[in-house]
Image 1: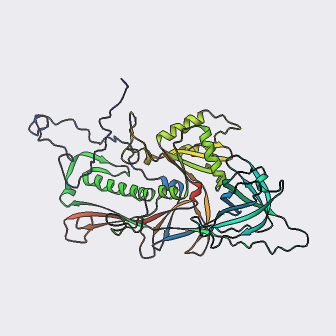
Image 2: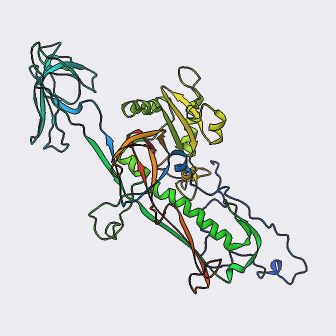
Image 3: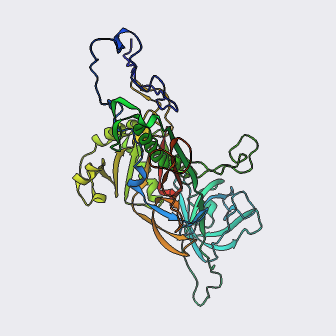
Length: 487
């Protein structure tokens, strides 16, 4: 029989109550062993046992990003397109005499205008066979208003593309890029295209996050037998102090979790949807990477698989320093992978992001390694391991199911973007939070008391109500440099 471990206290049982119940307080009226009429008082451990250690989950965004104020209902930024001219999905018809290449035009499903001009030199690659050909463009159609763009290519090493190294067969998925140009003596550059740079615009909207804790005036004077303590240092024999503190800690976690897990509500949906009910949502970290970034699924922990990620980073921004926030399963796979590497050509330890201080990196919970020309800093992300959040599938006897999110690779450093509000290019961390704030109101993290208890005298309500509010969103810029690890 296979060994297994069934933890008695590992399951998630909500312990927060909106009212005083027997489970909240010590009970001495339940049987002979717990009776005030008995001669001796029981031996009581006054302090709570921290069964789950530090239960807070926030801190991820503070480690990798920044928080900045905003004054609008929407934050808009623009990201650069690539500098050089290239197209994929290019087709060549069958036949040894063929010299025309075509791809989808502005009337097609993927509307793309052709900016390759007569006189440009191109490199044509077949990703399936690895064969390629070079040539000069002798005719070109823009594809504006047409179903297809096209260029006619005169190869340098053969009479037609059909009898070049590409072969005479039909090819449907060629890749081409412009490598330069060539003009005859005494000619003008009238055929050369004047190319206007384009950019891609992205936006996100903040959401309002709220929470509240309330307790009656009588219960604030209720003295307990157990000394309570919380992660923020709150302590004493008043149970409501613990409840108020934990409400605050839980809300601070929500500030991060909401912009990590957030989803934009799909427009146009009918009854039952969030948008139909009047909610707009916000795009969170996972959603942004799924839409605009890279997804590494079923990572097996081999160096060959990790090198595929490196090769993909080469095609994107090639940010030298990157941080890996991973769950326990992926952390162990990476540790096993690194155990097979030795210092030198294959890689080794690296702490450049931390001023080459191993002590500084380890104090922050990071371990560093270098592979190729990239430095990686790995740390556990508690949010992915906690049994009350995305670690719910991780049991003591192994994974009880498929955990869809195992980790995320976040580039370190900043990006240059055009800020629509400021009207100028600015440098911002790739990952940062924007919160609503003005001279009249700062909504980064608000808390206030109402009622007539606990120092508040705002109403005749014989209770203390603690309110929490924030309005914020996450900006994931240059998401093409992020990698989401999934199963």
